[in-house]
Length: 88
Image (cartoon, rainbow, N blue to C red; front, top):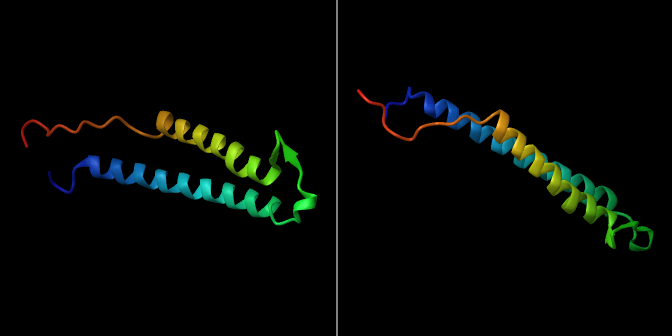
């Protein structure tokens, strides 16, 4: 398989999209966990029995990232054949 195969360009683009999604996930998690979680325990607010920092960073953050992954797969990823091209 030659290096100028367009599948390499598609694979690299999709890998970069995956890395961006991981960075977004970390920023959401870190921002909420340390933004809301840096207060004294007595000052915590609770959502569904969970500390607000945990709810926003782990529960809501996970839901947001799942939606972003679904949108990326539907709109940004392409179907690529793994079969060798005929005539190569």
